[in-house]
Image (cartoon, rainbow, N blue to C red; front, side):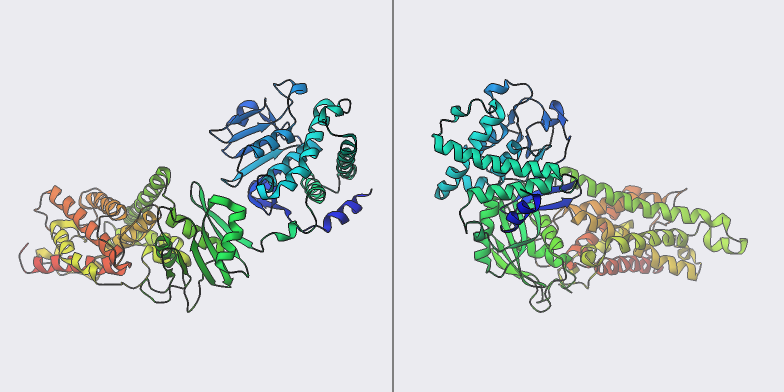
Length: 584
């Protein structure tokens, strides 16, 4: 039989298997087991020690790992083999080992899995088929499927281990033995034809064709056509054992839920169904997730450019179990962005992720400060006539810091993330309660200001006034904008109508602000002036902490960077007015 004949036969089947590609290369997947990837490459092999260290959810088949057969049940790493470290004549073949695992209850829908193989011999292909079709083999209502494939697995395992001399060990009646043997030879001849034309058929394509031929032998006519008509668009993890699936279907949300449960089992936590472009329905399937859809709505409203303001009626919303996208405009997010936003809303960030966000926020703020001191130090390179306005000028420091902050903000606060960094008008009025606290912190020395030379009777210059405007702007962009926004990715925060508490983004950005305020007051790096030079340093540090925390809460309660910026200017103006009145 020619290869084209096999392809013609396979083409008559529903397209259940497919070949996809990710950052690690090409892999084969079955539509009914979307989280199980089969990677096959000739001459692929790992050592016994390396195999046991592979990520959880790994299955090696028939020589892919140079090791004895093993089941690491704790780490979910299995080696189904009968070559190395075992008595081959007494050890079951790979396809039989796979069948034993499946019949003993191995649920491949409980997590993502990767199957590694190197040669598409019939034993390996049969093992892959058993694993990819385990849902049907474990279904008590589909006993006929198991009855159809078990003889094929048992006889192929016997031949692979013992050869053709001991077929009677199968215990099959003569007619059954001959029929099963004929079916195996039909499958084997398909593999032989593909081997002969391997320049035209890669191992994954050949394996996929053989899997479809096994389907023909096992499944009754019309059985596979009952696959659910759901197109998966994106998928992300919500927790360690739950996922969100963004999909498209003509069916309703509850029909889609039933179909997806068949594919993902208990791992299905949240469904996002696209009914038409830009319009989605959300359904929380697992009521025992750590949060409800309210958390997803908050995150989606924060990152969706279609939601112009967080208190707008055109926004993501609904109940804790079912809801939808903005009704008037629909969403501007892609399926992948929706899945990622839901993942961020439900998943508790790891310690490494949180430390990473803290480190990044600190480094970006440090870069802005370093740029300011660098620009200030360039004064000697400018013409003599300009040095009095540049060298040692606080405007040079503020300008350098502001430039880096603007560049960083422009890169970070892209369209789908601008609200994360405070790019919206203030909402609510609760943040105004923090104004007296902020002014108190400013009067203690917490507000950023250039050296106020005019308190000695010297009239302010244009450079002085420009520096007065630039210092608070640089501070708010750096700390309440960039640093606070980066921390929001890993920590929870207040919202306009939510409960009051001191969040980690507020506390950490206030600490960064206070830390970088200290060197601004002292030479040789000093670029700012203390509003009240007579105050002890510790009072000024406490003032910076109090001022930074108050501004951070204003930022969270208003959702906007404009609120803390306005309060910063107000606190500075109050201190200057008191000083001008002779009270300092």
